[in-house]
View 1 (cartoon, rainbow, N blue to C red):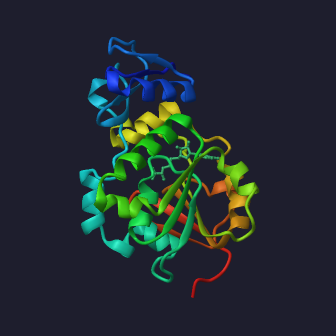
View 2: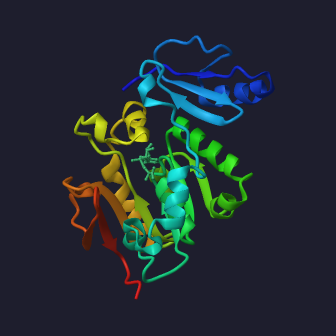
Length: 257
Ligand SMILES: C[S@@+](CC[C@H](N)C(=O)[O-])C[C@H]1O[C@@H](n2cnc3c(N)ncnc32)[C@H](O)[C@@H]1O
């Protein structure tokens, strides 16, 4: 889907930062909030967020590793018993070195970093990457989350290109969670996914992630999919793990035992 996007910044103290960001993202900078009906990025003292002025009920999207849901998950979410932790193999091996080749909001990456993993995140969409970069910067001034985000690094760009330039087996696990064609049931989808559907689209080239990921992963590639969706690249995994809303397809290169 195509969209017109502007960066709104009404704070004089943040103006030069906003100019630099607008230039980098190749979007128009506006210093008043009287904008049209399309997507807007907003930069203020609280950080960078994405808004859809035509749908006020949706609310702004800001990535915040210190928010209530992630804090609760960090303290009471079940640790290595969580589905994503089991899928990457944290029951068998600690402190995995993980490449998250489809970072998105960084939620899966943050959960894995919370559990002791070193996570390299790749995100190709420049706006999503900017939101993620902003979240990592804000986290640096919050000691409890900073000790976790210190173990997360972000690269903006195509992970297919990135992976092709890396040595074989250079990560323990490669984690893939590309966008999947959606059913249209808006109410059941998280706010971030409602924004992503408009902005990022469907990741039509998702199948091409699997082959380079299998070269890079020493132990396994983990693919997160909606429950009833076909396998990535129609390739049957070594085994699948069903979660409440998702399925994790696991392609084993080497046993972790
Ligand atoms: C479903 S979201 C990932 C959600 C993520 N697991 C989370 O916890 O928020 C998919 C993301 O992967 C990104 N993506 C898809 N293919 C990519 C590629 N080849 N290189 C880099 N990023 C990619 C998309 O831009 C999108 O932001």
